[in-house]
Image 1: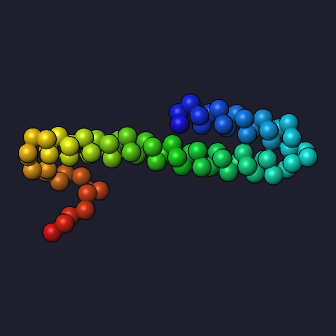
Image 2: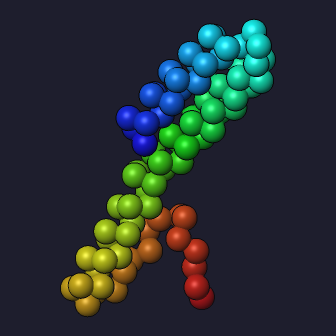
Image 3: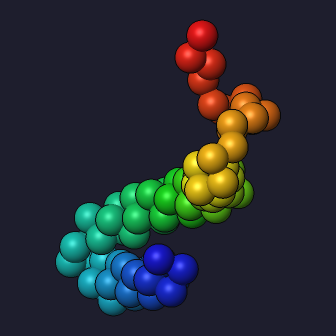
Length: 79
């Protein structure tokens, strides 16, 4: 994704620039792609910073037969 997003962004920008006069919808396609790409990048960053480390902690605790200590506010209580 890190390599694909800039490549697709450049490609949609070029399409809008070259063919935009005959196909004005290409500017919309490019704009929408940029919005989706930004949201996706934020989502992936959250996964890398919060979700994946949490999964690693859960897996380690399970492998060691240890109780998992709930220390993150994103983990719902099951009480």
